[in-house]
Image (tube, rainbow over all chains, first blue to last red; front, side, top):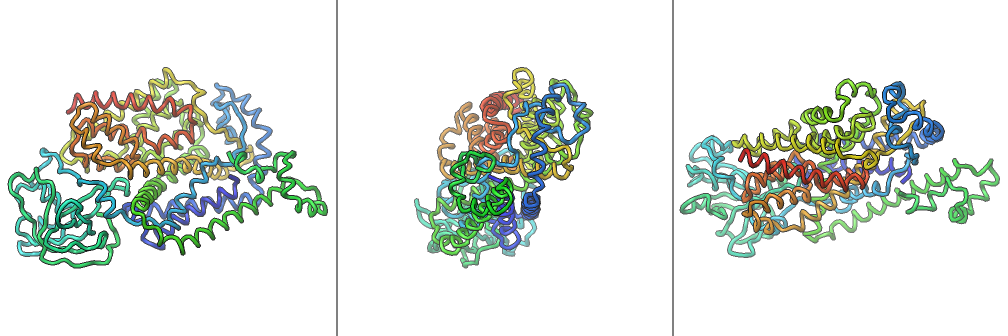
Length: 279
Length: 360
């Protein structure tokens, strides 16, 4: 891979990062919204570096540097030896020559593996990967289990339900709903009108369908499934987005033993995809 | 190297390259009219070829974008592509940050500065490096190039490797993320800090005692004495970006494939077995290659597993994973990886069992 190719690869990769953040919201399909500014910065740095490398190459600058370097390399490596750390301080030129025995390779070339940097470019511009959806929910099987018992405490909920007036409709994340349904011994959820937004996932094993949402800490590789069962409304097409109002179907017995949470719906309406598919 | 893959474009330094000559027969005629058919001439034709290649690539991408994108409907493939892109793009800012920092270390900080801060004796330098790992906010993608440049600046390899392991394991962002994920379980936060630091320092000491200098392959780069600091900075950044970046993609490809293919039910089947469950989560951490700043959130969701198993997930993940192995191979060579990775696995697991046994 010559230097022009390296520079162009960096420009393309940087453009992919900038396209997915500045021109579109595609990056929200893959990473947390908080990564946006960092991706933009990384994209700008890569485009700049690529342009600098190409300009320097076209001016013949780095080529001249290589040729000059070819002569002093052997000498520098020989005199540097192992003990010569302090005497190298004076120059920038020494770096890399001391320990590795000075086997000169043409540093202006990159290994073949650097071509793989074009894969993410292809992924962004050709595949344009969508957010994870029903396929992931179905293939993941069960959702995350309840947190360990000893974590429970009355003040652990910071969701909308804690502040809402008793007769208000409360908008919750699917994750907040599931957490309440699993560990809230006070059962504050009972009888309250809740609003949830998520995508539809068919339930292959039993009746009804799931309203699901993926919870993401950093990027799609660490996505965790949260889902709520709905049985009183006909199953919509998979991966369509729905806003559901209804009340929690309160289970008998120990909440901790419940394997899936159910909501009985009062209204179900389709929504256009929310800008951030994860929560 | 590309010498082998694209001989016809690499022929410039080799006067006996007959393939290049026969292809460039047309060039020779014109070259006869001009002063000697020298390097510059062939080089510029190679450059033109590269530019055409990229122009073609971009055109094909544009056509594929218009005609092909909507045809991709395989759910499994799209999930794979999403996870691959997610891992790549999540690591990219950290990689660029790490590469820029390591280039700055090479170009602007004189070697004498390190000698002031890091003890000369490797045995004493290792714990210092371990503690200083707690200061650099970044994940494992940033620390590989930084460790490489530390070694080049004369820091003892063992100390640089300890830094490489400690920085992604115990830095402030990771510890805060762990505290958020394991709210109400301070012992888990403590266990992670102690076990990771212990493992990093012990691995460093093992390397001091048994490590051999020729296991580490560092790229030898030489710059003309006249090169300005900014030129050194640019060259160093480009070099690290191409090496570490290329291998980051290898790791992301492997991790995405396993992420989509390994069914979660397999995990639940072994969650109850005491020692095996620890090994399974350690193995999962290696395969999934989740960023160390996010792994606590995944660990907390693996609720069927024991605290020690979750600890193993968080101790092993930042020091050994597919993405990291590939990047280390790119910077230090496979000979290094074949020795370093097993040491990390063994010491990391021992440290997990020890700290887990004391605290849980």
